Length: 319
Ligand code: CP
Image 1 (cartoon, rainbow, N blue to C red):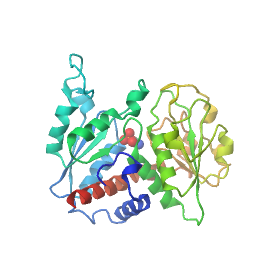
Image 2: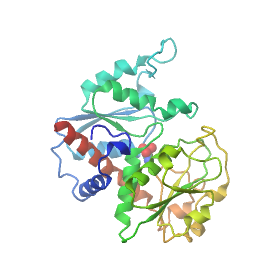
Image 3: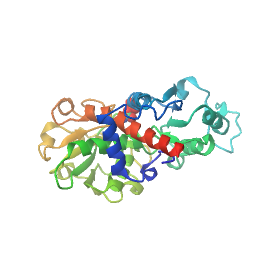
Image 4: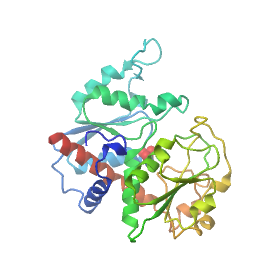
């Protein structure tokens, strides 16, 4: 593995899941692998789980993690190669990234989309520029369109839970929210489940909330949430803003919020969410606090996803 930016960077998803679960069983078994190595974790946007789980993962491998909240503490970065910098940006990524490449062995980046300029967001300008100019492996800590560490975690959690000798039915359902949110988690989950290929995968959302088919191709898509939920083994709840008419809120129908009554239609369905979640808006408190919810286990598994990815990158780099 040279970088970790999307599922396309992973040669064998099942092998990576096995590696993550082996770290869960024995967190310190490779505690010398990252000795005298450093990862820089650059946050242009807020985070709790991604930041802390990646720091813990690095520590378990004997690696030093240095966090830099660029968005709050750093110089404002320019990403446009043609820019004449007489505006608010102070330093070009072309100048900053090579320095970070000298300070660190691996660089993790979190960037959110603008939700204003679809072409720019979907070109993944920010993470592409770091990849181009840093000269070291790049780990996406969530980018404009994808959240691969979250998606790997999600498949680890599903693998842990599902032991039957049949394909699980996995449903990704849109949920209401008061803010326009990125499509990253939904795009990425769809991309990974489709690439994994071991599940019957259904996406349900209101009209106007179609995701980019680049990521959803292979999934069944319906606007009928009740139909989608029938016999589901896993229900992944997530809000996203519109993709086609970009970055809009077109539905605030609270009937899309998952409740215990809706869950009765599933096959003892386990409920997942990447967190943070707005209680009783995006997901009901009764579901979050009930026995169907596996969101805490899911978030805890972020450590093992990050550790397996850092381990792969360190091993590739050493080779
Ligand atoms: N799920 C997730 O990425 O959480 P954070 O935003 O807290 O990192």
